[in-house]
Image 1 (tube, rainbow, N blue to C red):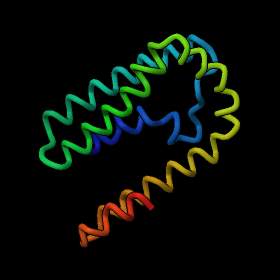
Image 2: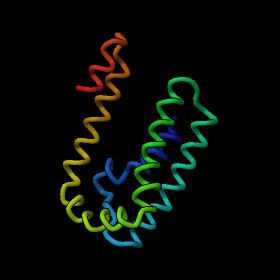
Image 3: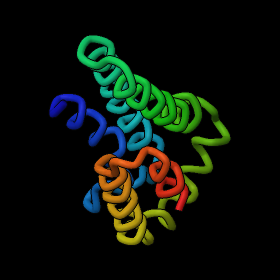
Length: 127
């Protein structure tokens, strides 16, 4: 899964990586949109080729969610593009806390994966 992990990490990097910033102008946003479109396509291709069952479903939902937020909304809707650029400086000021929250959330999701009692997984996920 390292290839998929790598692509998904790039797609979510604007949130998950403390050194990545939200785009503050049109050129930066265009560049981010191009990279995200490429990585989403590669992730989808890898998912179709290399996953099955529940893993495929979870990855598919994740890819769809990121694609809807990043490509179909932030990259294509003019009002959303303006909103992202207008708010990016504020987002970037809170980046450290956002990255910490993202990291904690991912750690919780990974911990849930190790829970053997299936009835506890959903309550833990929603906690």
